[in-house]
Every structure is written in structure tokens, then in C-alpha cells.
Image (tube, rainbow, N blue to C red; front, side, top):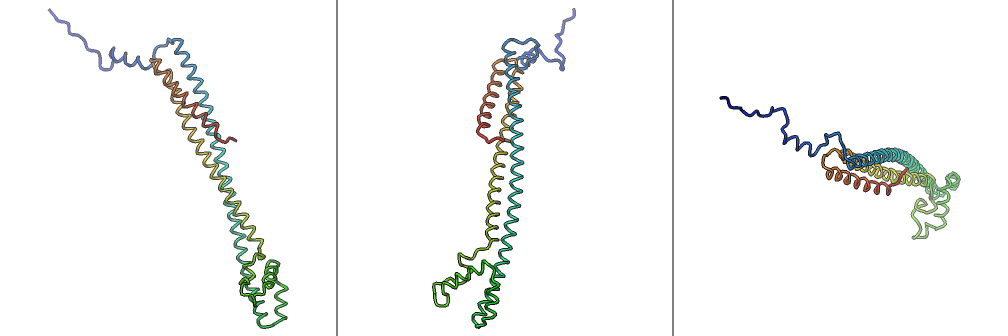
Length: 236
């Protein structure tokens, strides 16, 4: 009399216990309850909104990235112009110094002809400052300025232009830094909304309605938080 030997399931076939665990978490049944349909619908809405918010954040980040590049370019150009005019001012000031020293030597030598010749060729800035300096009687007044070049009347247009372009360079650099900061913030929002896509995408994929709703709620909370932050950012 033969005795029946129970057959063990094939290794590659899932057991009943394994199937129950799998079916408990992942939806494989084509039939959906009314609550499941609502989860799927709300998940689709959340995905659509998160997709739009992600695209908008990426778009704004790109725009501000372009503003940053333009502002940095303008800042660099202004810096170059400022350096150019500053260099010209140094050269002009050196020429004025040589001309003034020659004039002062002619005065000390009482060479009136050379003194008049040089004085008549003083540039306007040097002439104005020299007249103001002579009016202080430097030969007899110990409190007089040491030279016309320290007088407030000595003003070079190139110095003013250099300062103006330097101020422009600093202003453009500030704009570039602000645009860079705003662009980085939008990038962070893009990552935040991408996480919403993840939670919205897996909502409805579980057999447990509690887990599905939890994923949907988490995604919704993150989306609302990101939207609130987004509304505080400048937009183009």
C-alpha cells in the first residue's frame, strides 16, 4: 500500500502566504471601489498641479539665471570702464603735476616769460585749483594746503566717470547676486514639487486605503507648503 507524499510548491511559484502579503499592499485587482476611484482622481489632480508648479519653478529659475548672467556681464563691463577712466585720471594727474612743478620752478627763478607761458597752458582743472591755492597765500600762510592737487577745486572729469562706472558695477553686481539667490530658491522649489510628484504617483498603488490616503495627504501638504513659498517669491 503506497503512501501519498505531499507535494511542496515549486520554488518559482509564490505561495499563498506570499500572495496575500503582496496583494495586501499592491493593487492587482481590476475592480475598484468608489473610494479607490476618488483616490485615483485626486492623485491625478495633484500630479497635474505639481507638474505645472514644477515647470513654472524651472521656468522662473531659468529666467532669473539669465538675469544673473546679464547683470554680471554689465557689472564686468562697468568695472572695465571704471578702470579705464581711473587710469586716464592717473595719467592726467601726472601730467598736471609735471606742468605745475615746471611752473613753480619758473616762479622761483623769477622767469616771468616761462611762468606766463606755462600758466596759460594750464588745463581748466589745474588752473582753477591753482588760482584757489594761490589765493590762500601758501608762501606766507603756514595753514595753506600743500599743493593745488589737494584742493577741493581740483576736480577731474575722469575721476567722476570712474566713480560713476564703479557705482554702476556695484549696483549690477548686487542685481546679479539677487537674481542668483532667487534662481537657487526656484531650483529648491523644483525639487520640492518633484517630491509631490512622487507621493502623488504612488497614491492609489496600495491595496490599503489608509496608505493610499496617507500618501495623498503627504503629497498635498508638501504641495500646499511649496505653493505658499512660491507665492512669496518675485516672478517675471
